[in-house]
Image 1 (spheres, rainbow, N blue to C red):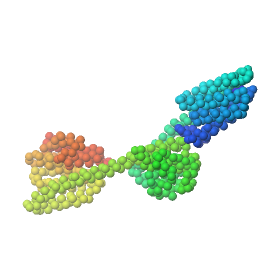
Image 2 (image 1 turned 90 degrees about the horizontal axis):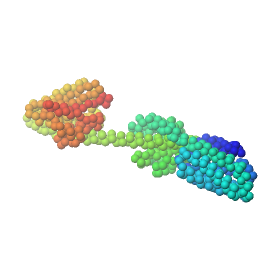
Image 3 (image 1 turned 30 degrees about the vertical axis):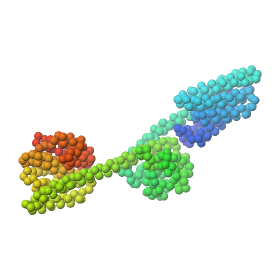
Image 4 (image 1 turned 90 degrees about the vertical axis):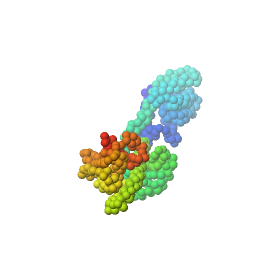
Length: 547
């Protein structure tokens, strides 16, 4: 009898084994929570199993040795009260109705209902790792209770004792199958971790391939990104949208979409509105003929929905748990990359705006000094004044042509020479300027040398009695070009150096601070400023790979 009971339990295990090989069933089992519809289907399946267990039972003097309690206990422990209690009531009432007045019908009704509640309690209170053992113990308890009720309910009691003596051992020992069923189903659930690991690796691989294209987000780069995603997940089509329009679409039906094609599906609009992903494994919309499965995941920046990632398949039931897990993780990576790209673009724009602002503070500062020099020469040395006007006009004309792009260093040095000629006219023999320039080809930001020369003259040479020398150097140092301005003046105050390096603007050293800030923005490091025994040395290096 015990072997026959295990045969019926084995049949149940075999049926379950083949069921969980079906992808849609595995998808339901691997979900963290099931929908009411899915719970209803699971409940129906276990009710049928329990009723089948009753009909396939072994008749022993009016009693049935069967697997009904095994089914009730397994269903309740695995899926909770929805399944356990309902299956307990349905199978218990069914057992009673097919044998009304039978010696075991009422005890079986009572213990079936109790088994449903006990299984539900274990599901709610017991850790998953111990549920299989708790199920075996609880199943044995319920069957032992059944034996006791049979003895109490039977008339005469000797009949009950006779039945129990024959069926007690196989019914109680047979509850070992509860543990086997629970472990079988839980093995499918536990695959979620392995699936998540594999899909996380796939998402990271895709992110690694698409990373270069996020450096500049535009329709072309997004089209390439969609193509990479489509190929790696073997989708029929992939799209990326913002809140209103389709930004990129690759794959089946691509000819129906153009850049900035307006979003028309209600499912996409719902994802944007709720911020929750949506999926469908059946035909979606008449505007997408041929598409059977669709997954839409929101893209978020700072918890605000900024668009969606859409994955299409032409076959039904292609959106599995593993694909869903991977796509959600991938969407989070894409959201982060798009946010980083946007922040990078904003930073670049801010840098350009700041560089432009710094230039505009330098230009009037230099112009004021130049006009003073010309004004002082125009009566006594008109020829010299005309030369200075030519120098100034050349400088200003060049200045009007400046862009955010870097310029050749020789053009910058020409501007410095124009400036120096004006300063020489102002200060005469007190100022000597020397050039120590290697033959280099390098691009530099505009107006970074002239303010340093101005600082050396105004705050160095002119603060010292007697003549002084300013040396402008451009030296090739192998892996970098060093640009420096050194003077033999009074020497810079250490407090000024500290203010510049700590980005505190000193009223009389705006030009020096501006150059330091611009060089820092462009190359990641600012000026090196050193006070010499006699004078000041200021320089900065431009790495050759950026020149």
